[in-house]
Length: 278
Length: 103
Image (cartoon, rainbow over all chains, first blue to last red):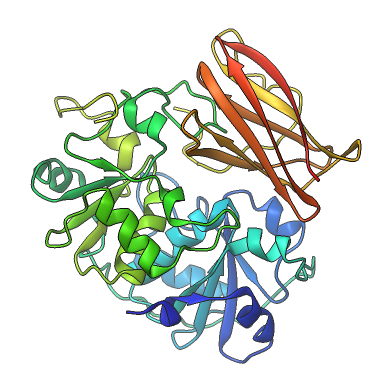
């Protein structure tokens, strides 16, 4: 895997807005961002209502993913380019989803909406409709997804990378600081996890740092390249960003995203929890 | 548990009804350039070590809001028209008002 296959620049994107077989998809939690102006021709996916089961805490199943992509007019052979707000958190989460369900031709727009806006590139309010397809998904690739028992078993065995902010890691905050802090679960982190905030991997404009910079950041933080890795955050979207960096950009082979993340782990009865910065 | 999302709620000066300013450390303010409010700025909260903690986009009126904890914080704004930052020390719960000018 190399950077050229999984990341496209804003300039490449603007040059390929009308290229047949390239589909731009905006992924946001706040769909008003898309409605207020989106990349020309882009369709939208709402990470919560479109990608999550609306009853259980889990993903849409294979049939649901097929129905979603078919309705959005995305075909199995299309090159999908994902972008979004929040420094591409939810776009990275969707990228992981696309890989989970076996879609290979998918890339992230480097810098997402932020870089696009800072560059002053065009945003339009046009209603986009693409002809429906008959998309076929694969079974979930569970080599990419970690579940809770596997995480407990990974303590002191695998690399556990907590990508939340230092104050969430230490237990001072329970959620990112733009959200209210009252939560049901306990504060802290999984014992033996290293704390490498997702933001270390990004420049201020939302683009990813160079491969050399990224390798240095995770190496200095103590990530053991010879071990398997599980990344987690609070709900699994920021850790998708780091999963993307470790597996897709740096080429680590066994990297899983724990989508249950702290909202699940911090609510489990009887599991060990560590506090403070170590 | 509140909404499971990580996206920023709509930014504005009025606190949501379910927020108790007696419990939360709220850092709220406005981004401006040449005295005029700036919407669409990327406003990030940095902790006392300068590490990224959160980011929101300012509203059309230039408003932003963070839910922090007691301590020293830096608020930094990034916009096509420039950048700017301000520091704040929150001693405890309550509403802390800030102004960030970008140039």
